[in-house]
Each structure stands twice: as structure tokens, then as C-alpha cells.
Length: 88
Image 1 (cartoon, helix red, strand yellow):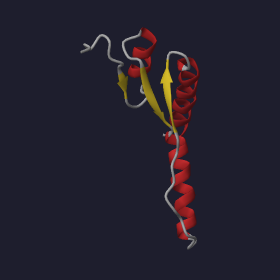
Image 2 (spheres, helix red, strand yellow; image 1 turned 90 degrees about the vertical axis):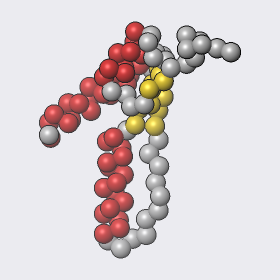
Image 3 (cartoon, one colour; image 1 turned 30 degrees about the vertical axis):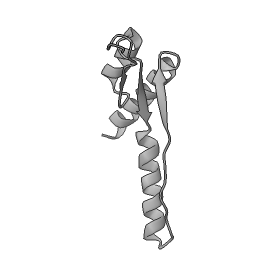
């Protein structure tokens, strides 16, 4: 049987505290849920539905964030946060 020290630790949503915990090794990974992609796809489907077009289920992919790709997702998070500050 294994203890918590040997178990992989993962959190949902790549929020700043979770990203810092990946960098420090407290957490192994998280999921990046593309909020901009989700919003864009929702708007696209809503417009199509409003025009009377047939719409179907849609899936916006997520990505696993870990130490190997953390810096690229920290950059994406900074870009996302700047966009949010610009409009909200």
C-alpha cells in the first residue's frame, strides 16, 4: 500500500496558487481549462443557434500542466489576466 508521499498530487484549474505549488513541487500537475476558448466556442454556438442553424455538442480541450510545461502556461495565464483586466 502507498502513502500520500508516493501518490501523485493534482489540483483542478490552473489558478496562481496551484501554479506556484507545481513550481515548488507540492503539487504534481493541474488542468488548464481554456476559459477564452470556452467563451469563444459558446458565443459561436449561440450565434449559430440564433440564426436557426443546427448546433451540436462541442468540446474545448484541456491541457495538463506540470513542471515540464509550467513556464509556457504561466505566460498564457499572464496574457489571459491582462486581457481580463483590459475588459473587466
